[in-house]
Length: 147
Ligand SMILES: CC(C)(COP(=O)(O)OP(=O)(O)OC[C@H]1O[C@@H](n2cnc3c(N)ncnc32)[C@H](O)[C@@H]1OP(=O)(O)O)[C@@H](O)C(=O)NCCC(=O)NCCS
Image (cartoon, rainbow, N blue to C red):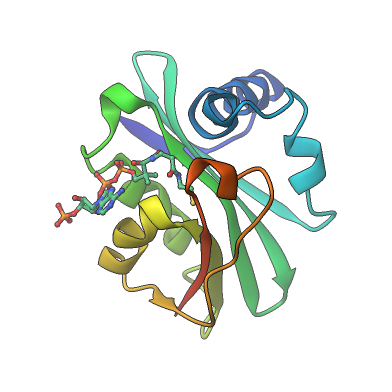
């Protein structure tokens, strides 16, 4: 398994497909839903590659010089619970290791709060009910960790 930052346009397209397959297609969202989640901020994309196949991806944005938001993280179902998600987050930490006191936040689905908790993220505030997710029993929890 190779965990690395995205460098090629071709990889960006595969990340887009993976996020769609794992995160949004199961909720019957429209295919271009990612555009409405996009932040116009510096972006970091990290992938997990297995035999030329992208099996996991993390997308994060710098919100400010001290804050990063993990916008999306997804691992193909057949590859979940194999430490790929945590390796993607570790790679993000490695990329920012020359900086200190960076706050990393995310809006975790209730189904992945346990994953982020294992990585040391703490919940803040109340759960958020968001249209499109709530109908599927999914709510979001803001969580953060400081590195
Ligand atoms: C959530 C997700 C990214 C985690 O990636 P993963 O590769 O399966 O996770 P890892 O194998 O690295 O797990 C790390 C730890 O978290 C735990 N964990 C993983 N997913 C979990 C979950 N959904 N709930 C509770 N704990 C979880 C693992 O058991 C492991 O614990 P351990 O260190 O004690 O063994 C992945 O399961 C996924 O893509 N899920 C569907 C999409 C999704 O919900 N994305 C997040 C949207 S906010």
